[in-house]
Image 1 (cartoon, rainbow over the protein chains, first blue to last red):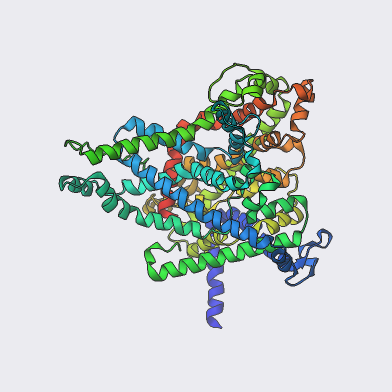
Image 2 (cartoon, each protein chain N blue to C red):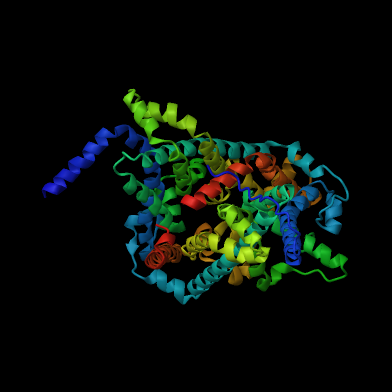
Length: 311
Length: 306
């Protein structure tokens, strides 16, 4: 009892003492509360039959009906499977490419070549996914696309890629690696730069070939970075990169089975204003499961290798 | 300060072995190919915007300019109202959002890195938690519209991205490089908290401020998602969303055609799309060589401390 009272005055005292600091913090606190914490209350929508006129809190409860519709229609499983598979494949390919490029750029001695290639590789990070969508259009569209140009000038028959759902996972994977290679390789190059030069020189004196140096010095030193990047991304395994999927695939209905992830499904139905309950259920299940996965992964890592834990 | 990654090592003056030579050849070839793949789409984009519509209709987009034409740009700037207004919206939200966001983030980062601020860990976690858990797309959308009344308001383009925890963590490591003794001595000299922040801290944070504001500006400039969700009236479309509409060819093309007084059929629509994309990305491509290093240092710091 007494400790509680003490605590309260403690906080109020702190508030008074550091009034200026609290005021400095205020804008950030207000924004986070209004725009992040406040909408969390809306998660209850997953268990409600939402009607705009009744509002989030006035609408009637309907238990697990929304979830039942979502999974009975098969959509729930499909979009969950797509999201997880895409994220895993994209994670592995994009990190592998970034590590490879980072090692190459670090080993190459020609300054101008390094600077120039690094600038070009980093460039895709700076453009919006809308522009990437423009690229996709310029390359793959049936009438004027670069791909069909090349095929025809090589004497082949033009293809309509938009009728071939199986190609799109590859296209998406390539564009994902393409866009993030520069960003991720910056991280790995920084990690490689952190390696003590003397170790390399000593290895060279001892006659270690470049490939051996990379295997036994570079890769072990960037291991923590690799693990951190993997962990960060595993924690987001249920979140599709919405902007990428939406801009690359667009509204091509025949591709949805192969390319729909939770985020695109929710977004599309949100714009159409249909099935809000099912949407809210998908969104709820994504948020909650994502949170659970992050907590479990982090706890596991903390127990096994505490240095790698995210928080 | 972590500077741009420089990994030049002194050339070791021994003859390169065969395996090393092979390694370097592979390294040069693959890096060159990757760099080319990153660059070529931009070249296609720019070349096509300067190519005549007739040529594109028959031969498609290509890397080289075969029949030079300024038609697409002429059309865009003949009735520049639409484009200029979209530019205006993008510049407005980028300027306001970047300025306010940088201030808010810096203030928060400063407070949570003050060792004598008792609740700094709790407050940090309060911010950090939003990266682990959120309300999801549906409830966020409904709350913004129904309770915060952001539908069709430019505020919907500014507020959602204004405070980002990742940037705050980057800023915090910039702030932590300032010795605490500086603040202590200013206090002893009788300076108030606001005076300390604006007169002592801010001037020392120049590179941090540039880094954060560039990240924010890039995010605002490239944003189309919030516009798609919340903005109805065409007058409030930012540039990226206008471009998106143009690509979708909904009514956007027809509108430009009618403003310019030509038939939709005669529109150089293929080159126009590319020209619009160039207009929308132009500012980024122009400043890119100068700002690249700030992003490199920001990402490096974020990956170490984040």
